[in-house]
Length: 168
Image 1 (cartoon, helix red, strand yellow):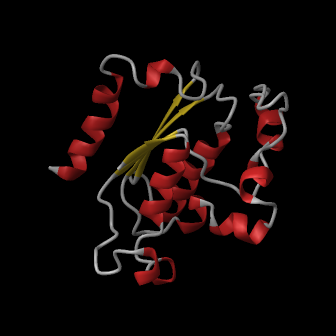
Image 2 (cartoon, one colour; image 1 turned 180 degrees about the vertical axis):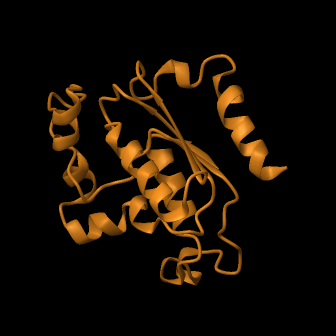
């Protein structure tokens, strides 16, 4: 599974919550189907919702994108401000030894999802699963949904070889 931006968050959530019966069941559909993913790619998706992003942007010096004229953190607007709920919605909370191999693509000048989201997720995966379960490609000159992520054969040179390692 591969996803970018919000799709990256959903990819991480789907992969990392597999095998959690409290998040499955007939009320959500497909309880009789396996929910395990073999390999995933997160492209600049949010992995940490329970820590508001202002600190990350201040640390990096990257200017936050404006939405409706505001540069305010949209996390509380989109998800609320209940730290417990935000932790439940944060894929990083579900990193365990059973997660699938994960490729993380992130721009260092991302003005929507700060790059620290990717680096902290990668570090957590290495801490829990050991080296090799995840690969982080951090691009110095790419912003959120930068065309270079999709240009020509960029995905073919990065994502497909990673997937091939685990799907062949």
